[in-house]
Length: 268
Ligand code: LIP
Image 1 (cartoon, helix red, strand yellow):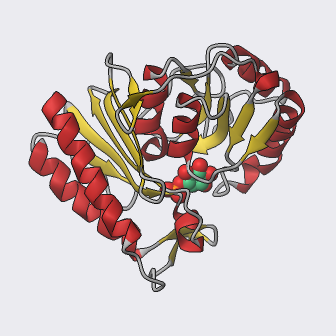
Image 2 (cartoon, rainbow, N blue to C red; image 1 turned 90 degrees about the vertical axis):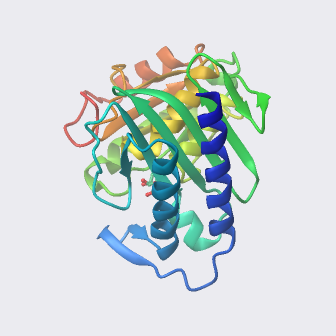
Image 3 (spheres, helix red, strand yellow; image 1 turned 60 degrees about the vertical axis):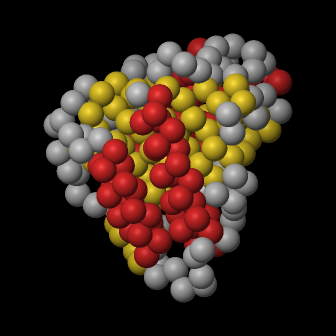
């Protein structure tokens, strides 16, 4: 498994070269709506990764953001976001995560998240710790009051807007400050690396968080949906991730804003 892990890392790094090679004509198209965008590079990176990863583990299935699921009933499944932070990529904001998770029977076993602009390679294998560019990383033990809180706006779901910003405002009042990176995989890895203390988002897809959730857990963090239930990797889910000192406070703050696991997005 260690050799497979290194081969996955190598494939993700090569995918990063495709992202860095992008020219001005990104071939931007709308998916579900005006704010849900995809480029020809999302598709190209996913095609590259699907071919390479399935050559490494032919018996695996593949679940990627930009195409229909491929044998996701299998024991091993790659869960991939080829360019997490697509809108950042389109705008030239260098906060982009190439995210590859490998699940076994629905449990994450390996995670790799790479930002090709900063050359930050976040990695984890279950039970073996979390790393950034090969150096061990771990969450802080700061309480929220001493922390940076990351959040996402679930902008594909306007019905979640008021709740998202109500929770973000409460976090702003309870933390040092808030940040909205635009790439869930990096939000999770930044908490794992101690660059912040918590992250929430009302609705994400499994490819947004599959790899980053394992990296954060292996860095000593806690990752659940916004009701405190375990994450799911077979459908959309809300996200409440934090270091151990802040996770319960985050859940209490979310519950105080009336979140009861809305059908649109939460795991429960
Ligand atoms: C993005 C997530 C982000 C979320 C956006 C979008 P994409 O993923 O990483 O956290 O707020 O709505 O889902 O679409 O760029 O791969």
